[in-house]
Image: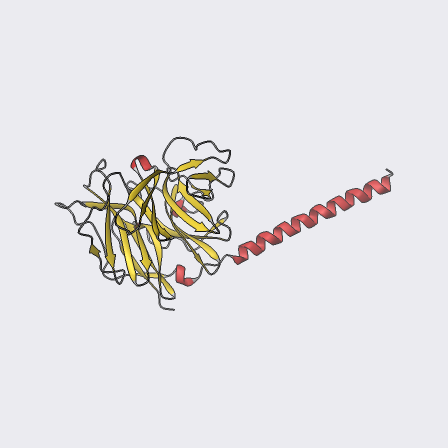
Length: 316
């Protein structure tokens, strides 16, 4: 190869690499521009009569309530599942249930606690093919699965079998705050490990969950102060073609830690952009375990730990 040919080849390679970088940069820019945070998901005012639900206190089975409870709206009917206990750290965490016709005024089940065979806290519920599926933390923050046909009588399926991408079990230790999403015949599981990040696994049948994203978390704490030290995911919704994650975070600047409720968005479940206006709640309010519930064309923002507070959508 002569010098002229060699120089031409090098020039062509440089031009090709430049074009590739331009294309990749453009794709990244387009992706970033597609992420929007509509006002209906970000602007709320505290309800004037909070809390709307709390523990019944001494002398009752739910001296205190804790962690993430869950509200599921079916038509005009609201379900609420929550964790009650005797107020001690070691006390058995039991499942309670209440219902409402307006999402504000609640009636407790006379059968409470509706489940006390095993430790249940930090739960979420979805309904699939007439079966309610509950994913919750068990003892030692191990994620578990329960099922019900009526939302009240529950059967424990067992702990979730989560594997690394190579098929081996994930390292021993807690894996909790499970959030499950079903789409296109595939189940997706988000979970945290000691609040150090949010991982994502998938399964065709909820029997074995396999990590994706090369076993790396899809979201880490930071870089802003509000979630600099610890995070956990609470809920996922899909709105106008975009996935939105409600998560809580803390900078752990004091003990006990003060948590905030926050929002992030994604187009593919893997790459998440945190809302620049986070947090949605004030740190001094210490409101966590948030969730967005449809309210006509708008949403309500509930926070669940250690009482249920309501934030109503701002006027358009």
